[in-house]
Amino acid sequence: MPNNPLTASQALHLEQTYGAHNYHPIPVVLERGSGSVVWDIHGQSYLDFLSAYSAVNQGHCHPRLVKVIQEQAAKLTLTSRAFHNDKLGAYCEMMCRTFGFDRLLPMNTGVEAAETSVKLARRWAYEVKGVPENHAVVLFPEGNFWGRSIGAISASTDPESYGGFGPLLPGFQTLPYNDLEALEVALQNPHVAAFMVEPIQGEAGVVVPEQGYLRGVRELCTRYHVLMIADEIQTGLGRTGALLACDHEEVRPDVLVLAKALGGGMLPVSAVLGSDEVMLRIRPGQHGSTFGGNPLACAVAMEAVQILLDEELADKAALRGQQLHQGLQELVTAYPLLQSTRGKGLLQALIFGENGSKTAWDFCILLKDNGFLAKPTHGHIVRLAPPLIISEQQIQKALEILAKSLEQLQPR
Image 1: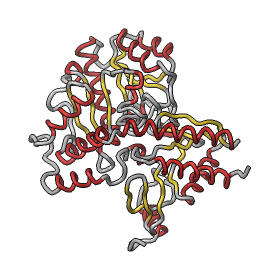
Image 2: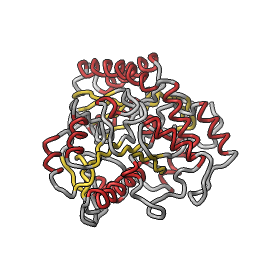
Image 3: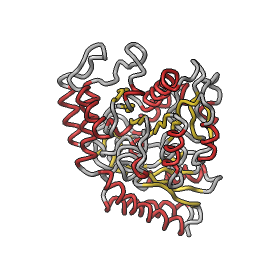
Image 4: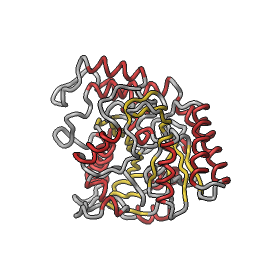
């Protein structure tokens, strides 16, 4: 058993007493992780089926990432953008060549990158499209989630996100997700600069649009001279069984937003990629970040992406995702508590009845007790997103734990 000076109850008490209450975590105190498994401070192991909201696609403490972060941390970590460093250029080149874009703007977190894409779209609208100053509109689907900054909540349709935090920012408009007709109506406004869309809505409960939706979005944005911004913060970097979720429909957005797994679970790294026409709208002094593009982040991000490619993790996510989805379908058939399952690759969800918020939470507590970590989203939905390196045997073990926990929740 690990030698830890704190018990779980002591650690929870300290966090509850001195920390802000802006999260409601599953009551487990984790101390270490390796691959698809994490351990609490008392040595109990768990299959991790959240992956830090898809930030740990490469698995916990991947040895190549540990090596890179140790070597770079001992050499140079931060210069700010006041000076050049020897990693940023190589990182930008690798990312642009890998994903097929002209330029990259480095940031730290997903919400920073998403807000950067909005700034870029607005500036592009004024300088290229000819929208009158301060009249640009950015469209978002209902159910979108890209963080909880003032900008992000101004685009939200979730009262829990925006309620009590106004006034909200102008220039944002929402419309139904997976509805090309509604999108075309909105695009007829000549002041629209961009449409930011998640290929699959993760935080909303793994909402998968109809096949052809992304291709339709691409065609409409092109027709109406509007930027398509793909928010691949959660769906990108192999999660859905392709390097990007947009790849399933062979769609290339005008602006690509990446984060989470770009840092390999080691540190926050995010990026916005686009064409010269879009990316060169912002000039020196108009946008930036002290930590964005720091050499430590660049070194880790390059290795994180190279691991995805070398280990063919997108293909593995597709294969293991099929195994997981088939097993989840069998559980839905067997247990009336479950309404349905949906997802793509290793981004899956179990949906309880609409009034199943308490049931979903109780289920996740049972899962924890049985050595499996997951978390409800939107009350009645349990998102399942293990590291992409998970094995066939671990998926099978996970399905057995899910069945055992469902049986404890509602015996057949």
